[in-house]
Amino acid sequence: MTGPIYLDHQATTPLDPRAMAAMRPFLEDRFGNPHSDHHTLGRDAATAVETARAEIAALIGADSREIVFTSGATESNNLALKGVARFVGNKRRHIVTVATEHKCVLVSVRSLESEGFTSTILPVDSSGLVNLDTLAEAVTDDTVVVSVMGVNNEIGVIQPLQEIGKICRARGVLFHTDCAQAVGKIDLDVNEMCIDLMSISSHKMYGPKGIGSLFVRRRPRVRLEPLFSGGGQERGIRSGTLPAFLCVGFGAAAAAAQTDMTEERERLTLLSSQLKEKLLAIPGSELNGDVAHRWPGNLNVSFTGIDAEALLAALRDDIAAATGSACTSASVEPSYVLQALGLDDAMASSAIRLGLGRQTTAEEIEVAAMRIAEAVGALRGHVHVSAA
Amino acid sequence: MTFVMPDGARREADAAPGETVLEIAQRLGVAELEGACEGAMACSTCHVIVEKDWFSSFPEPSDDEDDMLDFAYGLSLTSRLGCQLVFTEHTDGLVVRVPSERFNALLE
Image (cartoon, rainbow over all chains, first blue to last red):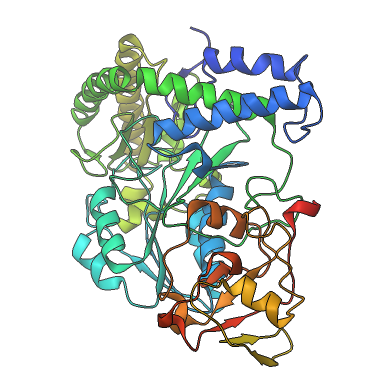
């Protein structure tokens, strides 16, 4: 292969060739506007978009009419939280979420606070899991929505969605889950898990960037105040012309994920346990996040005394990885997710995130583990020499 | 039953079991509730907001009704289509609010 070993699959995934092939005609001859129903070019695009919608719905056990296309998971999370809060707003005014959620969820909640809503930000235990009793206690008669992510983007921890869904359903509160890192990777069923709203990202599951979707339950109907005013596309929930080629690519990626998911998960489980074993053999290394409830394509590891930024710089030619979520990787602040697990600043800023994916091979894992061990050793040597 | 108009005025009407809220409104001459599709659930011009205490007196809306309500202006948690609300002896004294704006899918 050329270039460094790509171990940053939580930041983004490469485009599945099946998605690429499906998209191509819609960037060439089949350019119709899917909302133009007066001619065959428009209707052709509309049919393709509806097929894609059904493929995405099938992946999470939803009805295709429950899938609303958006620009990505950030928009989906904004639409879900601000949409339901503003719709229900004069009746209920409390939101429950978790300290380790993606920034766009936490900042959306903060923004709703400026509109007069209140929030409870639940803590997590040292393994990154939310406590179900604490969550149940946080829900009040004033709660509009509980928002808990499926797979954490930094530490790969899988929250107990079904149990949370049951608590919310029993209390008559909406349950939203940010599943940007989970869809196409772990088994999800919106009905079994009592999910009312689910955010999905295309480019985290080998689809094109720039598109995502929000699952919005139809029965009982979940209603949202739209973020944008416009022509009323997407059942009035999300106005704007649909990018047919992106919808089609996203749908093809969903269909591909459905076919490959189980096999790929087993393969990654094996690869990541090999990598984990090698990394944890390095003295002073520690895995962050629960060992068992975890997406195997993520390993987040701290190396005592190491500055993660320096480690990534030393590895730059060999490995593409990250310190935290890509959106905050430009900042030098230690990860708020790791801090929520109870890591002190030194341990939090010594952590790197390794994201494995479909292209990752056993050979790459072997090389990556070796390079990381060497780099950690070299950096510690450097620290030791300069301190002496 | 009572219609609370957008300006706050209250209009009272006698109602018989079996009549729909839309039929009652039309008999009373409530022009705001147009009923453009004549109860076929193809428009949402008979959108009314049922007073909270009365909302559970009616069977739940069908998917078709919910689909049309998706397009109604000023949608609320107790929104319904007047054409789908059948008056019974249990709804004697019913109060619904008439929203200030309507959306007619048939004209779009």
